[in-house]
Length: 174
Image 1: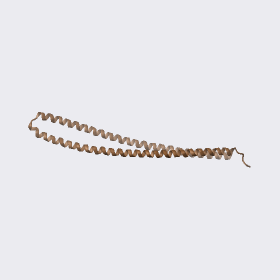
Image 2: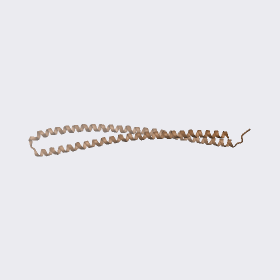
Image 3: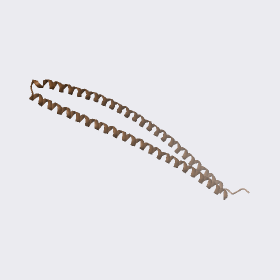
Image 4: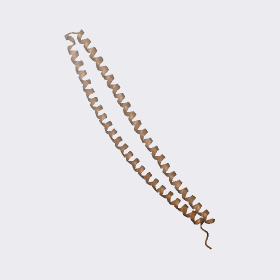
């Protein structure tokens, strides 16, 4: 009878170890899920920031286009209403507009550089996401291996349990 209790206690210890291992695996999954969620939140925030910057740029460009349109309308009206006295003034305004257009061209060039940088950052983010996918795949492989090992342990424990039952049913040798 004492041999049966020790075997049962031993079995319970093994089960506790298995439960502890499974609990650790589950906790590891929770930690990984939290990390992935945090990365996703940071990426989402950065994407929102980029979209916000693009909206601001579009609003700025629209405002500049509206200003240019307004200036063009005013100039057209003045040209229609004046004579040769204003030709010198029109030339000055034309120079100003050319300067503004050059500035706009420069700003557009800068915006294109920023968009290229954003494209590069997006590419880097895609690489990081691919790396995370690879890491997740590796983790899945490891979890599968752990599942296989756990199954093997369960089979061995079952076999031991059967042997113990057979041994316990046999009469004791005196």
